[in-house]
Length: 207
Image 1 (cartoon, helix red, strand yellow):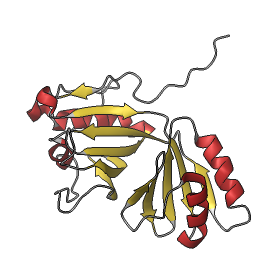
Image 2 (cartoon, rainbow, N blue to C red):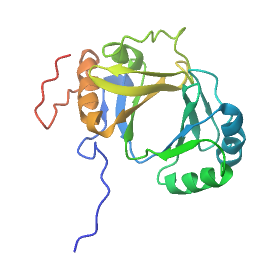
Image 3 (cartoon, helix red, strand yellow):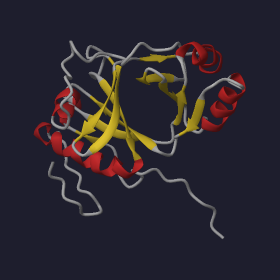
Image 4 (spheres, helix red, strand yellow):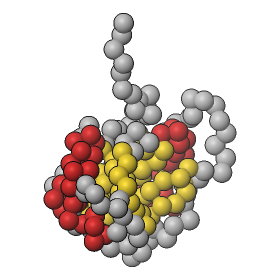
């Protein structure tokens, strides 16, 4: 009997790039992702103890050496951690918050992460979203939930425009939307020389 193999939703895709390092698109699969519901005064001490992160301001994220905490609403936060650490994180948070009025849910296999980096990353995202992505309005550690074409996702900027290689954006998207969004991003970047990817399932891409 063959042992089960864990496969990401984009296991069939290779990273895509535009010439002259203008743009790079890839998947970072199997990050730990834990949703926490509760008030910041209750969640804050536990998250500082377990992950070393401070509570973020609205529409922002905070980081430690290994974790990132995203604000999603006044009482909802998403903790990101290294690959395959979700069960240890879940146990540690449940122990630290034992008896508190909170909700802790492991959603690691609900979303995957697309990483879009390079000088043309903003312009590519602008082809799919109505967010104001001007560098004055969307900066490092900024977080926003939005639609990219027909796909729902959370966008966070993780590297500054002035950093080597240009800005870096991460999009957390549902597994079922991941291939669609990967293809749409390559379509949006075709003006920069990015080779387009086509959906394997044959769905229409018009938005």
